[in-house]
Amino acid sequence: MSELRGILRNHMKEKLAKGEVVASMTVRFARTIEIAQIAKTAGFDTLYVDMEHNTLTLDATCQICIAAQQIGITPLVRVPANTPDYICRVLDGGAMGVITPHVRSAAEAREIVEMVKFPPIGQRSAGGALSQYQYRGFPLVETQDAMNDATSLVLMLETADALDKVEEIVAVEGVDMMMIGSNDLCGELGIKGQYDHPKLAAAFERAIAAANKVGKYIGVGGLASRDDLVAKFVKMGARYVSTGTDMSFLMAECVRKAKAVKDIAI
Image 1 (cartoon, one colour):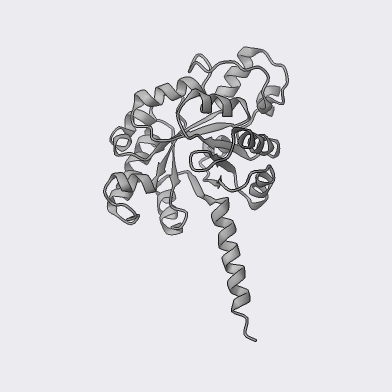
Image 2 (image 1 turned 60 degrees about the horizontal axis):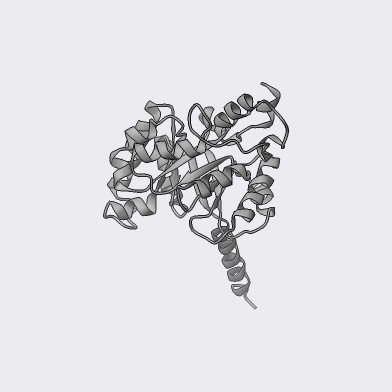
């Protein structure tokens, strides 16, 4: 392994390549870098900062990403829009990948690849020395090739259009994974909130088969309250699990502790 590739490691990708299951935590509540160490200590492989569903600033997002890099937990960012002002800036700011919402076609996927990957795969602009390789100077051709290998592009599969075209979308060069957003997809399929519905299981089955055919991966999203379904879809072949948010974890423990005190018999 070259010096650069030894520094620039995406631990999530390494686990996926071994066929292991990746556990991810979503950051929506925390605003400071301590959340990265909490996620690492808890045993998560990766975290993603969800800019789509909260008011976290770009600066706070990138600080969390840099902190995560330093301790070997892969930082991703779920962007609020598939545009350069989000995608390119969070990648230059410290993210090891992006999660992009509402992708509906292979053409849209290719447009996103253009922003995420350096030439010859995409058209990402060179932004100088980055935190991912410790702001050190390496030849441009070496850094761009290594960054392409280390940067993850995760597309959200949360629309009926995307499901209809999943074989084409997941096969696009530069796409690493598709994560099924179970809540939105169920809504699109006319089965809102019906996670046990055969249509959702069929969606996972189809997506996993498509991903396996081209050496890509499928992630499980939106099922934090259903460990049984998570286990089902992992056994089916999914290899990434979005386990829940920092806020939901905090709230669950707060409720448990408050109840424990109130239940004390006096």
